[in-house]
Each structure stands twice: as C-alpha cells, then as structure tokens.
Amino acid sequence: MKTEGKPHLIKKLADVKCQRVDGSVVPGLEEAAQVEHLLAEPNSEHSVDGVLCFGKENLEKHLKMEDFFSCALDYSWKINCGEVYGQGGDDLKLEILDGLLDDVDEVDNIQAADDLSVTCEGFQLDIEFPEKFSESDCAPHEGSNSHNLDSQSHAPGFSGSCSSAGGISESSVATLQESNSQNGVLRKMVSRDLHHTFKSKFGCQAPVMDTVRPTIEHVQSFDESDDDEKPLVSFILSTKSVKCSVTKGGTLLRQKRLRKPTSRYIEEFSRNSTSSSKKCLKVGSQGDLPQVASELKRQRGHLKKIVPKLELESDSEPFASKSEDEQKRTKRSRTVCDRRKHQRMWTLAEVIKLVDGIAQYGVGRWTDIKRLLFASSAHRTPVDLRDKWRNLLRSSSARKRNRRELQGETKPKHAVRHLPMPVVCRIHELATIHPYPMARCPKKPSDHNYVPLSKQPRTAKVAPVYSQGRDLRRKKCS
DNA sequence: ATTAGGG
DNA sequence: CCCTAAT
Image 1 (tube, rainbow, N blue to C red):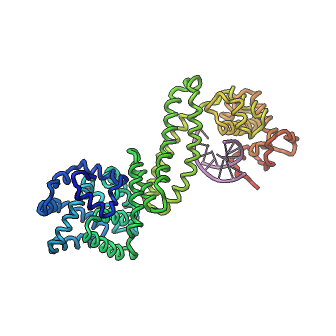
Image 2: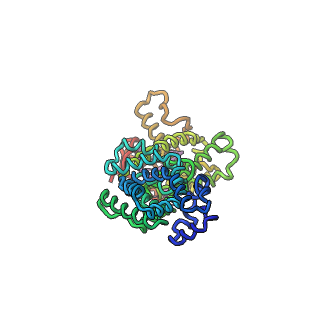
Image 3: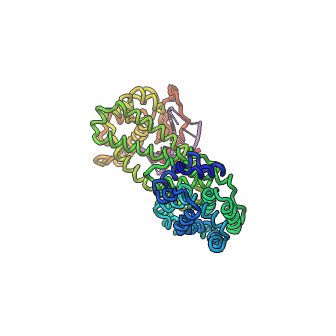
C-alpha cells in the first residue's frame, strides 16, 4: 500500500486495526499501486473539497463498485448507498467520501481487473441461481472464471469465489468490510445491510468478520501459489478449498496443485529427453534415468494419496466435476500417448534373463530379479518384469492351446512371436512349476503331477483351477 | 515399499 | 505400459 506520503492514512489504518497493512495482503494492492490512477493525485493534502472532487471523480467507479457488490447483495446495498449519497447529510457524505478516498485504490483495483463485467455476470449468475447449478452454467462460468483468474492478482478477494453462493457472499462481505473498515458509518451501514440482505437471501445469519478472514487469507495463499498454466485447474482447486473454506489450509491446496502437474511434466520431460532416440537410452544416459524413475514413482505415490482427497472435496460441484472430467480426458489422452512412446520391446535376451531369474528366485520376487538381473536396465521395473512374465505365460499357454487345437495351422499368428522353442519350453516349464496363481496349470491338473513347489519362498495360495488360457482375465474365484 | 490384478 | 488396491 502506498503508505508513504500519507501519514494520516497510516494513522487511520492503525486505528482500524490495520487489517490490511500486514504484508500478507499486499500483493494485490501493490499491483494496484501500478494502476496509479488515484492515490497519486489526491496526494495534495486534500482539503475537504479535494476529497469531494476526488470522490466525485470516482463516483462513477464507486457506483460501478456498487454494482459489483450489488450483484452479491441483491442491490439493496446499492440503493441504500444511493440514498445516502443523494440525500444524506453533509457529514455523512463527507465521511462516506472520505471513506471512498481510502477505498479508491481498492475500487480501482477492482476496476483494473480486466473483466469486471464478466466477473459480475458470474457473480450474478451465481447469486441468482445458486440452487440450480446446471450444466449450462458451466461453460460461461469457466470462461468468465478464467478471465477472473487472469485478473485475480488484482482482486484477490473475488477470484475463485464465484463458484458457490456461500463463497461469494463470504468473500464479498470480506472485501466490503475490508474496504470500508476505515469508515465507521459506512462500515456499520454496510455490515447492517449485508446482514440484512444475507439473511433475506439465504435465510441465515451473515458470516461474521472472524469467519470471513480465513477465507481471505486462503484466497491470498491461493494467489501466491498460482502459476500461469492451468488457470482452470487452479481456479477449481481454489474454489473447492474456498467452499470447504475455513478448515482447509492453503498448504494442502498448494500441494494438490503443484504435485499433479509436476509428475506429469516430469514424466513428459523424461520421455522427451530420453525416448527421442531409443539407442541413446539403451546405451547412455542411464546415470540419471533411475533417479527420474524413482522420482516418478515417489510422486505417483503422492498423487495416489492426494487424489482421493480431491475427489472427496468435489462432491456435487457441477462444473468442478465437469472440468475434472476435462482434466481426466486430457490426462488420459496424454498418458495414452506417453505409453506408446514408453514402450520398449523386450529383447530375447531380456526374456531369457527374466526366465532365468524366475527360475532362480521364483515367481513373485520381482524386485529381487530386477535388482540382480536387470540392474543395468533402468527402464524395467519390477512391475514390468511381472507384466512381462504374465504376458509370457499367457502367450505360451495360448500357443500351446493353439498348437493343440489347430494343429494344421501354419503359425499361431501372434501367439508367441519369434520366441525360440527352448525359451518357450522353459516358460512353459516354469509356468507349470511355479505357483503363479493365475496361469498355473491351466489345463488339466489332474493328469499332471506338478512339482510340489516346495522350494518357493513365496508360495502362492493354491490356485483355483482354470479351464482355459483366457483365465488370465478371470476374476479371482473363491 | 512391494505385489497382484485389471485396463 | 499404466493404474490401483491390497498387503
């Protein structure tokens, strides 16, 4: 805030508990200083006239602001204010204008926000139809909200509050009270009207200052954590947190917003940097690849933790859910893309190694196999090994079946591609020997005396008997 | 953290 | 190959 050169203001503010003076609030206001319309000029140790003129100059703006507020306050505030201005006593007028002077920066602040009108529309919509959040509302809302987000640094209290009526009234009230906190009469009036309108509107008591404050702080925290990209996402998140308001801390929100994209970006980044050329990956650059992988993994874990919370919060928030859907859609498409890029063919050597490892350590000890046999290949995670083994089993069984059923056929199409017979035999052997629940003894266990698999450290539960190779997809039966 | 299982 | 639930 432009505190310098306005000692009287400082004093005033100090009198009013300096609610806005602490640095936490500043971001928006500092930017407002750049708008520089107002408080520069009235610097002329404003006599009352100066104040008046100044106030009149900005009367329009003020009225606009009223419009803005009235959106949330059902116009009663506007009317009241107009009356006050039109017929009120001079004292009152002066006081109001004086208050306006102090507020002007804030008003301009709001004005400076690119699309006040849009914002107002958003508010109005929300206020007028709080009970029917229909799909049709969503699109315009999102549009307006993204605008809002662009301007949210200017008007912290307003962005992100459009979503729910409660949120709006809360932050609006907050802003109002903030901006009018220097003016006793105005303040009283405002709060009274606020309470009145709020009461008539929502049938309950208007929130008190104390309940309001956390919202503001929260919104601000949202502000500082905002990043340029994904305005929608950030908006939604902020909205959610505003909705569930006071209890939720800003840190959680930040985490949510930061983590999710980050993992994606990291993933993408690692893809782009590594998979641009496969050879490059296979030969070199393995030094930092594991780190990336582990990082990815870790973040995935975080993600897992965080996402459910997110879903919890999103209950019955129509356009939040919609945009979440959007998120999912984009995410899905991206992941599909990534998956393709990711894919690395299993070489025969790898398969053999895997089979060896399984024969050596047993099925299920994928981490061991990975650590001991695939230590050099960073891109094969234990899960990959397991997947590969699964596929091998499936394909081998399929091949056997094929062979048996259609003996005359030339080649079992894609059943097992290019796998040398010995390997397939080994796979089959292992498949019969090792207790991998799904694929074990796919055919007739009765006529086959399979080894009691005593050696296996990780003896799986007795597998249910499956009739066909397709049993891979079976649900587990009792 | 690791594994099983589904997609 | 990815994701998730279960352990």
